Length: 356
Image (cartoon, rainbow, N blue to C red):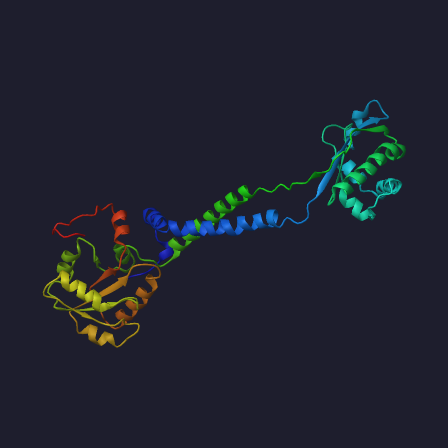
C-alpha cells in the first residue's frame, strides 16, 4: 500500500541544505531584485525626487522667570508647551504684526505661518528655541526676526510666569534642511528582508512540494522497488535481481515528461537477455495497459524534479486498477551530483571498473 504524504514527511535537513545550495544563485538573484526594487524606490523617492528644498533659521532665548524658584514650572512647561504656544492664534497675530512693521514682502496667512513655525526646549526651562522653516532663506530670516520680536517684546507681557526674554543666539542665517535619508541602510534592510522571505518561501516550497530528488523517496512513499538512476553503481545488479528470468519488460513514464524509447535504449546497454519495450504513458494512452499485462515485467520511469509525486500517484492508481504490477521504478534524469553529495559518495569508478 503506497501513500504520498509530502508535507508530513520527516524534515530532511541534509537534502534541504543541498537543495538550498543548488538554488542559492536563484535566491541571490531574487535578493538583488528585491534590493533594487525596494532600496532603489526609497532612494528615488527620498533623494532624486525629494521635492522642494527647505531652509531653516533657528533662534535661542534666555528666559527669566518671575518666580526665583522657577524649577517648579517644570511640572507643566516642556517641549510641547512651547511648541503649542507658538502655534496659537495669539502668538501668530503677534508675529504678523511685526512682519507688517518690517514691511515684509511675504504675505502669509496664519495657517501658512503656523506650518513654518516650531519650538523646542533642548536643555532646561530657561533656554527655549524657535525654528522657522520655509522654501526661501530670506523668508525664513524675516519670519525669524519677527518671531524674536514677538518672543522678547510681547510674550512676557501676556505670560505672568515670565519676567523677561532675551535673544542669546539670533537667527543670522538660514541653513538648508537635510532630511534624515539613509539610502545605505535602506538598501541593506531591503537585502536582508528580501533574502529572509526568499529563504522562507524556498523552505515552504521544498517541504510541501511533491518533488522527487532521490531514488529512496520512491521506495519510502510508494513502496516500489527502485533500480536507482542511470548513474548508480548498483544499476546492473538491481536489474539482474529485480528482473531475473524476465525476457520482455514494458518501459513507460509516470508522466508525459520523457521518451520511453531513450530509457529502453539506455537499459539495453546495461543488461543482456532482456527486451526493453517502450510504451506510452498510461495517463495519455489508457489502452496501453492491455499490452503491459502481457509483459513479463513493468518498469516505470519517474522523472526527477518538482511536481513528480502526484503524476506518479495518478499513474500507479490506474495501473493498480488494471492489474498491471509494476516490477520496479527508475529515477530518470536525476541530479547525480546531488545524490553523490547526499550520500557522501566520491566520484570515481564502481566495482565493474566503469565511471559512475
